[in-house]
Image 1 (cartoon, rainbow, N blue to C red):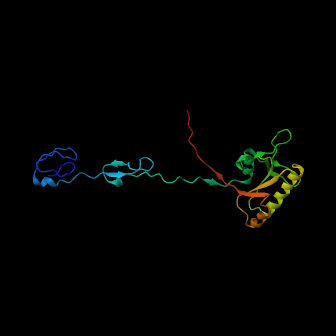
Image 2 (cartoon, helix red, strand yellow):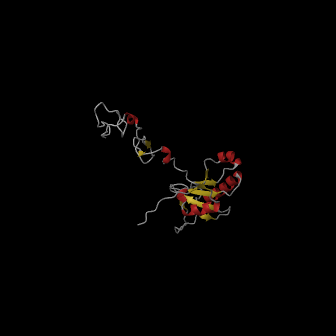
Image 3 (spheres, one colour):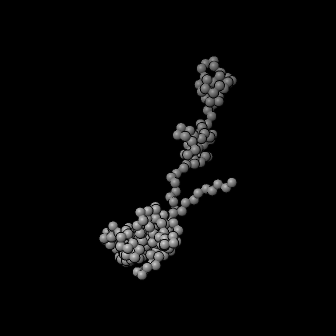
Length: 211
């Protein structure tokens, strides 16, 4: 005889199911083949249950949706126009390099953003944590690599001569949205003086706790 609740085979003369505890009342022979109850489906939810835990639910698995935690979405990245980047670096030069600060005059006023010289304006004149001068140049769209290097070297030379008195170390950083095709050999010739960086703007979102 089979248990009418779980379908477990019962020894002869035993009415209480050793599996579920249900007491089976003897019936006709045809009732012995009663269909067992529906099997329970186990679904795992990543991030909500442990490796051996799951969510149990009666019925077909296709009636339930499995919630999966996939890889984190990439941080959205946007282009930043040169004018906006110049303003940003004038306010937060440390974003470009830790310890970088805007050059100040004798009265301690920050004057390095858009610094004017006889050979052209410097997008950002800064000093690093060692005190060396740093000439930052933000390239315009499609500006040639050779022109970038030549103009940056002119500004470095002017700063070294007039502000560093020929003794203060001076180097340059050129920011380009896309690397010019003709930059490779030119950049190699000034590797010890000018470094090149690309720039992108990344946006992240954070929850705000409001009390």
